Length: 114
Length: 112
Image (cartoon, rainbow over all chains, first blue to last red; front, side, top):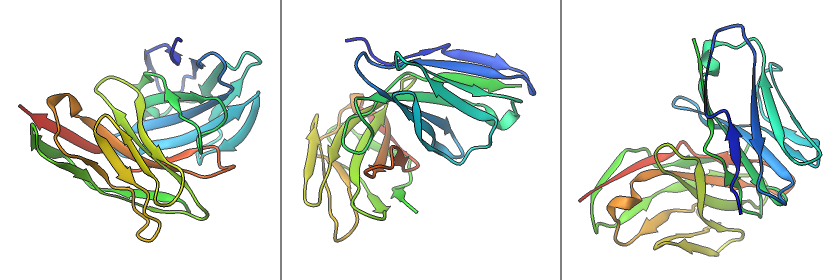
């Protein structure tokens, strides 16, 4: 079974631009979560989707948004990029949710904002 | 709120040494507890989990016991190998919360 795939793997953007990251979950998984990983803040939860519905959202500004499609693929968008948005963005999928099921993580998208 | 505190790193060990990484949590309700591992350049992988008090999770020689009385979930391995070099994250998840709360991560380096 193919794992969680994230595209692109690396991205360099300029301050003020916007960016869209994509995540394809494991086949059959309906829950997709996004996390931001930085050296200073560690792993922080962005949002979680299940069957196209956002069930939870972390404490991030409105510049961070996401969505999930009917095939469970998910995208996250960051508008008006800031230098502090430079991070590894991780996507994870699971059959239901995190609390009692395994979360399978993708390799991440490394975003650098200059 | 819900949070996880884990032992600061980095930790450097010799091969075959004993490894322990402390993890304590604060949570409202009864969380499930997890240890994830991240190898260089990769995403996180679930190492082990425990869903209720006194459960012991184990995998690849690693073990952790869910201790409700001390709100702890310490990770242990009796004899580490070079291939165990990675960053280890303790995490908790609560029913209907739909997210994992992670500790800061502990970098472990095992030398031959």
